[in-house]
Image 1: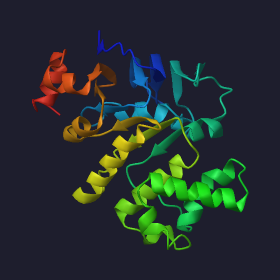
Image 2 (image 1 turned 45 degrees about the vertical axis):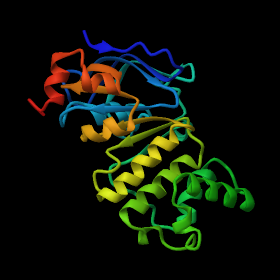
Image 3 (image 1 turned 180 degrees about the horizontal axis):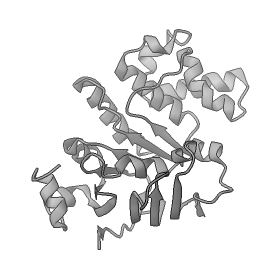
Length: 261
C-alpha cells in the first residue's frame, strides 16, 4: 500500500482509485492512484523517466482525450464533480485547469493577442477590459516591464524564459483554479529557471499548482507536497521536507539517495 498523507487543508482536487490506459495497452499505465491536491499549495511529482508523472498530470485536464482510444477509470474530483464523466465541458475544464508545457509554446501572433486569446474564447470582446486583463496577467507573470512597450510585436521574438512567462500569463489571464506545470524549466537557462521558480511560489497565493519535475532540488525548492511515482504507481505523497528527509517508503528513499533513477 502506498503512503499518502491525509492533508488537513482544503483540497483543490481529489483523486480516487484512478487508472489510465493508453490505447492498445493490455493493462493500465496508471494503477489505482488516490491522492489529494492541496488548495493554494504547490504539489510536485517526481520519479524516474516513464514512471507516469506526465501521464497523470495530463489527466487532470483530460489532455489525453485529444488522442482516440485512451481510457480512464475511477474519479478525479474537482469542484464537487468527477471530471472523467463523458458530459464534461472540455473547453471550460481547460480554462479552469490550465497547463504550462515543457517547451514554451507562444502562438504565432503578437504578445497582446497571445494573452488575450483565451479571454476572447471566453467571450470577452470589450477592448478596455481586454487591455486591463492582459496587463494584469503580464504583471502577475512578472513580464510586464519587458513587454509593455512591445505588446504588438511578434511573441516569438521573446527569449525562451520570456516565452515561458508569456505562456504562464496566457494561462492565468482566464483566472484558472489550478495550473499544471510539465517540466516548465527543462529548456531554460539557470537564470530563467530561477525566475520561473520564484513565480511559481508567488502564484500559489492565487491558484493551486501541480508540477512535474525530474529535478529533485527544484521540487524541494518550490513545493509544499511531493509525490514519488514508480512504474505507474504513486508510492508516497507527503510534505516535501518530510519526504526528502525521512521518507516512509524504502523505494522513495532509494530513489532520493540516487540508488536508481
